[in-house]
Image (cartoon, rainbow, N blue to C red):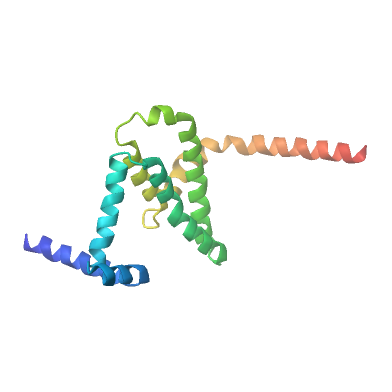
Length: 170
C-alpha cells in the first residue's frame, strides 16, 4: 500500500511540474488557493461526468477531438518535420472518416449506453502521439479498404481532363 501512495505522490509531483508551465494554472492556483493538480483533475472529472451523463456529450467529445489536434496541426504547418505533418494529416483523415460514418449512423449509435464515453476514449487514442491510433486505424482499416478508389479516382480525373481539353478546343 505504501508503494501505491508513493507512486501517486510521484505522479502528482510530475503533473504539478507539467502544469506549472502554464500561466493559467499558476494564476488559478494563486487565486483559489487550490493546488493546480487538483484543479486540473477536478476539471477532467467534471468533463468525464458531463460525458458520462450525456450532458452536451456530442459537443464535448467533438471539441476534445478538435482542440488538441488543431493546435498540433497549426504547429505542424510551420514545422519542417514530415513525420509531424503526416501524423496530423492522417489524424484528420481518420477523424473525418469517422465523423462521416457517425453522421449516417447517429440515430442508432446514440441508443448505445455510454457511446460518447467510448467515443471520447477512442478519439483520445487516435489523437495522442504516445498511442498514434490514427496511424493504426489508417494502415489497418482505411488504407486496405479504400485502395480500390485510387483507380476509380484516376479514371475520373482522366475523363475530366479529356472533357476539359475537348471544351478548350471548341
